[in-house]
Image (cartoon, rainbow, N blue to C red; front, side, top):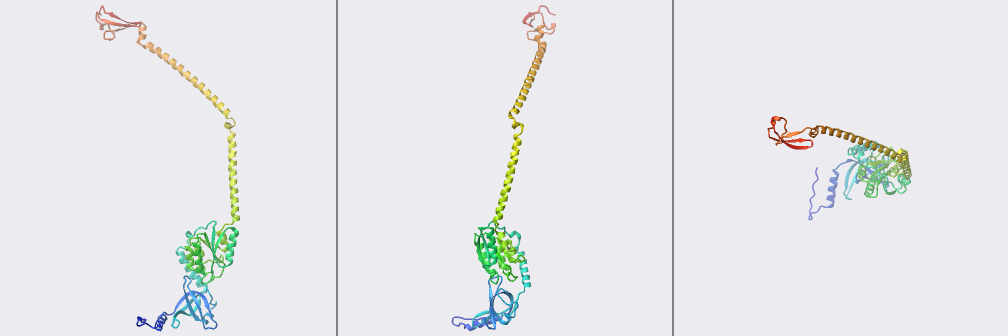
Length: 407
């Protein structure tokens, strides 16, 4: 059956009781629903038959006021307390007399450890599928942070372990400490807020999230989905040290490094000054040995070079080279003179041959060369005529003749 809409105007306003009854009627039609949440602010007032508590959402800042029969709460084992995860059968009710909306519980059932672990495993698979646990997302820690952010419980053993061990290792390390609730219904929200403040501080180089051991229920805030996503969104590297080594809340998987204990977290975030000083001494000793070895090797090499003959008696080597050069020069001189003499002999021989074969040589032996007026050499008496003038050339000169008798 649908609700009848209310009509009104300034001239015909609706009485408060009508509006209240309409709201009660509409809310009453919502029926009952099973709701899961975390219990806070449990109130058992004297001998009243009813008790009250707040049912808080584990992943968001939302809550509902719940009332229920006191006997229903008293019969629970373990007893209902702040931080208990429960499943409640609720029905919304609007109290017209006070104009107040409340939730009435008809059944309250604590969530068992097995069910919690199953839900955490399902959430783990979802977050892993999104890549929040991927190794490539994890950032390296700074070697020597100027300031370490620490999120932990107030005056807790975890805080003392981290601070004392870190300062023992490196006395100059500074801390920005955020004390928050580390268990209970408000723990996740407080840790998220503290992480946000430290991540926004540019002087903080690394953040440590530390808590001592506890039961599965005590460590539930550190598997809160909102907290896991907040750690994944941090710009500053985050180290977690939650519970004991066997505990594995979901925030450990998304952190950049996981420490098994708060003491181990201190060892991860700051170096040990004694160990670093020892490492420096070792490196200096290695450098000294290497340099000394190199110098020794070069010294031996220099001694070996100096012991060579060229360095031991450089002038003696030059004298040997000078003697060799003089011998080569003498050989070259003799070879050149021999070549000149042979060439002179060849020239004289060739000159004799030329002289013997030349026309002048023939003339010197008593022969003559007879030429006609045109310069033609007379080879046959029939070539000349009577009274022809001829030119005769002999060894001592030339003269003219006239033919008196022909052939």
